Every structure is written in C-alpha cells, then in structure tokens.
Amino acid sequence: MQITPHVYSTHIMEDPNTFGAMHPGGTQIYFVGDPKDHMVVVDTGEPYRAWTRQIMDYYGELGRPRISAILITHSHGDHIGGADRLQEAMNCPVRCHPKLESRLTERLGPGVVVKLRSDEVVPAGGGVGLRALFTPGHEDDHIAYYLAADGVLFSGDTILGNSTGTVRNLKQYMSSLELMAKQRPAIICPGHGQVVQNGAERVQYYITHRQGREKQVLAALASGASTVSEIVSQVYPRDLAANLHEAASRNVRTHLDKLVEEGRAVERAASYGPAGG
Image (tube, rainbow, N blue to C red; front, side, top):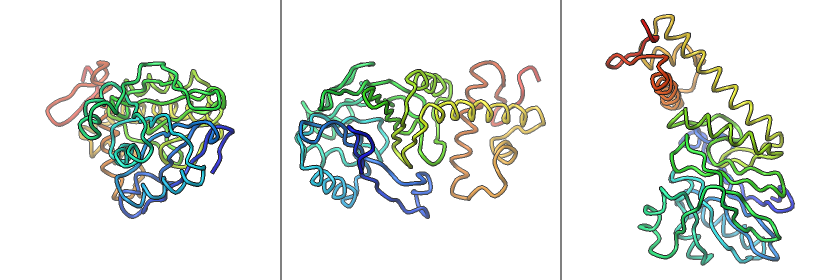
C-alpha cells in the first residue's frame, strides 16, 4: 500500500485473541524512499517466518529496490524479531539507538549495526531523508523518525493507530510527545494499527489523554485507593477485557512513579497515598 509519494507499507494482521490484543489493527512495516532509487525499511516485525515472508513478498512487489538501511524504532521483539533475516536478504546496515547497538550486534554480528545520532537525517532515496528523534518513554531506546518531505512521523510504539500504548517512564514519555508535537506531522505511521491522517491532532490527543489519566489517578488516591488494583478499578471501565488488565496495571504504575518522582504522591510499602497525607 502506498501512503504518500515516498511511504509504502505492508500491513500484518494479528490474532486479537492472543498477544494481538495488545496491537489492535495489526502491525505495519514501512518502506520509505523511491523504489527506482533506494529505500529504507522501518522495523522488522516478529521473528515468525510468515511475517518475514510477507515483508519479503512486498519487497518483491516494489521491484526489490536497493535498501540502504533498516531503521529500528526500539528493542521490543515485535520490532527487531526479523532483523537477522531481513538484513541478510537486503545486505544493508541496521541503524538504531546507541543503547540498542550492542544487543543487535550480538545478534547480527560485527560491522552490521550502526548507532544513530539524535537529529541525524538518514537518506531514504528520491532526495528525501528521515530525521531520527530520540523519544524515550515507551522504552529508553525508542526512536521516532520524521519525513519532512511528506509530513510523516513514524511513531513506533509511542503513538499507535487504534489504541493508546504502554509506557515505561511517563515523565520521559510526555517530553517525547511534546517533541513529536513540535514536528506538526500531517500523517502518523505507527508501529501498530491504522495510519493516522490527522497527525498533529493525534499527538495532542495523546498528551491530553495522559494528563486526564493522571488527574484520575490523583483523584483515586485522594478518595482512599492505595493499591494499583484499586486504582485500576476506579479509572478503567468495569468491562475492561481480562487480557488488558495487566497493561492497565502497568500504565497506572507509570503514573504513580511519575507522581512520586514529582513529589505529588508517596509510596508506602506496596501502597500509595496523596503527598502530605
């Protein structure tokens, strides 16, 4: 599927009854640049052979252009799982966050993985390039990529197409969202879910959503909730699917960690309460 003059995607569907429940709308693997010149690939998907075959089949549909680099958004297995097979087939360097370089080098061998610099522009063919935006929060080695020529932001897992995602460090994550907002993207190409056409509005929605969730967590603490489970019960819908409870608990914990770091909540053993209480 061609999304913009320089962006193409193959969409991999996932089973919503298993881990695919975390990725409503499936996974997107992107080819960026000019098929008649050269291109880069953004992420490599799960290590499943069926995924790699689909990516390679789409690569064939594009005419098997020269791939000048594989760009990784972050270290989770559903983004680096196919790196070895795709790199071998495409014979190109793999570019990633400096914190991920040693892990990928151990997997792929010396001389293959090249660290990215913050704000580095990676040529993608057709006279365009992608700017590497260091965007920690979902993971500390997360990078988003901005294609200014087409107004496209490749958001990895920082912004998803059909849902909100999980966060490791909320304070960092909010700063990353602000950095994304500054790009004013017309389109967001997420790691999972549908392509987002109102990009700038979606970034602002994520910022507003997280700010609203923080207010709900503070209100739950003020009302007497003191455990993650009690807070989840107050701030999430009662009919939340069972396989999403763990993700909801992780999100609540990230809010609590941020509030403790900012001095707006205190941790008492395994429970929490409002600061000054």
